[in-house]
Structure formats: structure tokens, C-alpha cells
Image (cartoon, rainbow, N blue to C red; front, side, top):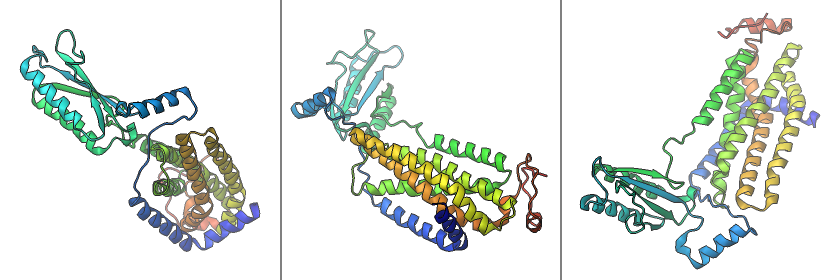
Length: 365
């Protein structure tokens, strides 16, 4: 394995332009395919053989309108200060909003607050329960739009309307956690290496690997019904392991340069040694994630296999694209060696390093 990886690293280093072009072509092809994917992912959780699943299946068979495993939303109405919802004007407005919710796409039923006794004793607050025919992740944009319209219409009439439940789209939800994670990783890598290039390569290859994995999972919805959380878990795990795997090889490459090896030889040695650890670690994670399919729950199976695929892509990226990027970086990757090291570069590389502007993050002696 080490010999094969050594040759692969040197080949990718020499043929860096071809390797990069191939990866760009692969990403473009996957991206085009993902754009036309139906995206028929499902958020439904089915646990065959359990009593609860049998009860849900029975309810769906006998009372399909009940939507036992469907998403729900709670709409709370509050009357203006000093008024009651039971007044003729406010009651008519609430009933109008409830009727609008009943006509919403994917809705199986809405409880009327007045006929269901869902009005407070003071008469100032009431709420309606909205049941959907689909799971949380499958609630459509049109259904979310109706929720927003109901809030706007109610507030225009002087009522305070609040939404809750798993069928309500969280406006605060975003990719902020992933972005913060990438930023923290970038800061740590810059501090560790003292070089933007050395820190940027693991991040760049990790982002490309995650993009390839997530787009591939999206493309797979052409053929399979995947859990809606599959892409999220694949993104999180893929990003984490891709940065680690690339970091192993970059760190080893810099050490090999300091030991006096030519860049191409150093790249081959780095991939042959640290790359072997990357392959072993990646296979371990892949087997563990694939093991989720043994449980027999479709949602967990799709999540595990999607994440395992993301890890496999991270390994392949680290062994092929990263050596090619090291070839483009050249000796600039040796800028800003950590201060605690006292081992200088070999004489024949010192001139190349001195000719390159140093990073503002500091250098070592």
C-alpha cells in the first residue's frame, strides 16, 4: 500500500494540471446532474416491527386524514390590548385565518379554536392546531408561504399571530455553524503553520471534497428516496475528516522538505506514509458508518451510507488532488515555519524560500 501511494503521490505531483482538470470536470458533471435531481428526500422515520410503528401504520390505514406521522404547527392568536377574540370582529378574522390554513397545500386538518375550546378564559388568546399530510422535511415552500401570509394578514387586522411546531420553517436556521467551523479551522491552521498557503490547502481540498460528496448525494435522489438529513450529516462529517486527512499529508510533506528531499520526492513520501494512515482511518470510519444499515431503519441507512461516501471522497481527494495542489504551491508552502522548530531548511532550498515574501504571521529561526 505504501509503495502504491508513494507512486500515486509523485504522479499527481507531476501531472498536477491533468489531475486538477479531471477534478474540475467531475465536479461540473456532478453539479449539472444535481441541478436536475428531483430532491425527493424524505424526513419520515419508519422503525419496522415496533409497536409504535404498527400503531402509526394502522392509523394511516384506517384514518388517513389523521396523518399520525405528519408535521404539525400551532398558530396562536392574541387579541389587541383591551379586546377579546370572542368579539364579532376578531372572531371573524380568526375564522378567516383558520379557513385560509385549511386550504393550504398538504394540510390534512385544522382545529377551530372556538369549536374546540382552545380559547383562554380571558378570551384574549386562542390557538389552532394544523396537521399536515407529510413529514417535517417534506413540507413544501407553498405551505410555508401560507403560514407567512396568515401571520401578515393577522397582524394587519391588529392581531398578534405566532407560529410554532415542526412544520414551521425556522428563519434563523442557516449554514452559520458550518461557516463558523471553517473559520475556526482556518485560524487554527494559520496559527499552527504560520502560512496562509499551508493552512489554505487543507481547507480548499476539504471544501471541494464536501461539495463533490453533497452534490453526489443530491444526484442520488434520481434513483433513491433518501432521508432529508443525509446531506447535512455528510457535509458535517465530510468537512471534519477532509481537513484532518489533508492536514496529515501537508504536515508530513513539510517535514520531508526539511529533511532535504526534492518537492516531488517529498510529496511521494508524504502520501506513502501519512497517506497510509489516511486510508486506514478513512476505511475505519466508512465501515462504522456503513454499519448503520444493519439496524434496518431506512433513514439511518441512508444517513450512514451518505456520510460514508463523503468520507471516501475525502480520502480520494487527499490522495490525488492535494498532491497536485502541493505541486502548484511549490516552496511557498514552507513560509512561516513554526517557531519551536530549530531545524533549518537544506541549503539548496534556502534560496528558494528567501526569494518568496514571508507571511506576516511570523517565521521560525
